[in-house]
Length: 71
Image 1 (spheres, one colour):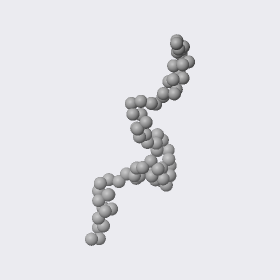
Image 2 (cartoon, rainbow, N blue to C red):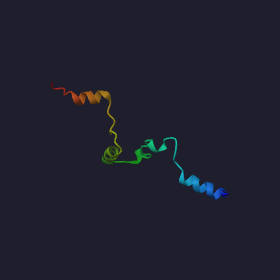
Image 3 (cartoon, one colour):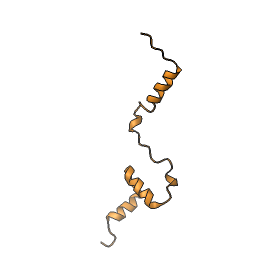
Image 4 (cartoon, rainbow, N blue to C red):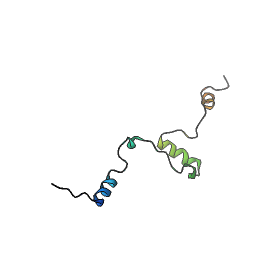
């Protein structure tokens, strides 16, 4: 059983297996053109879909938010 594995077969298999292996399915890739999303509302909605906080808050801002300054 001789299989004819020529250039066309290799290109076909390359297209099928493209991106598989070495944990590539588990990598998180954020938006490539995040800076081109102009409005703040769209950025907030997209960040929520992707599962991260926007705008990014510093530790100081998070502490100030938790502890009200009136008490």
